[in-house]
Image 1 (cartoon, rainbow over the protein chains, first blue to last red):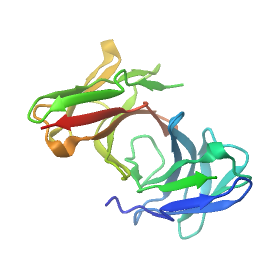
Image 2 (cartoon, rainbow over the protein chains, first blue to last red; image 1 turned 120 degrees about the vertical axis):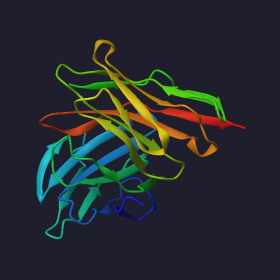
Image 3 (cartoon, each protein chain N blue to C red; image 1 turned 90 degrees about the vertical axis):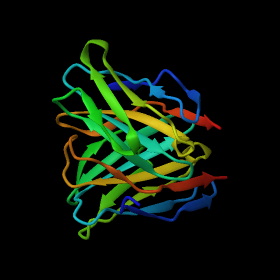
Image 4 (cartoon, one colour; image 1 turned 180 degrees about the horizontal axis):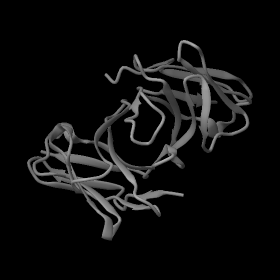
Length: 114
Length: 113
């Protein structure tokens, strides 16, 4: 158990819908990262927040957005869902915001878009 | 931009045999290198990491990896594989002042009795 929690574990929804994925980082960690894992794209970095502020962006679609709240939990919002958005979404957390800070991964949320 | 190549998509190894997973990276400066393992239905767990210093790093679960700058490689090894080592293994690279990790495509390890 990494100490990172993600809810829900599974999510099934229809095209065009909007969903919110939630992540609680390990106690004391200030950084939260979101990754998408799909069969065709592999593990792709989406976005990082550090202490409430956006720190880095990766291959995140405009239909996707995220935020980190004062209690440091984070939410990833996916809207206008398409079939291709079906994937495993991971949240990771670390103490700091540099590459030397170990990222601890949550168990993931499996999103299925029908 | 950094990138990672894991040439082997799938490896099958007998229990008790040695295991080596290959990882090649592309990055202009000194990379930060990681190996993660993902068991079925689980998140990723860090096995080991290399930032600087001794090029042979020890990790958890009996794994080790060797950084070879001349070959741009960071191969993962285990002398004797256990059935519980069956999983998917990911090599990742990070860099100073770059917050994200870039992952390889992963290598699936199957352990046969």
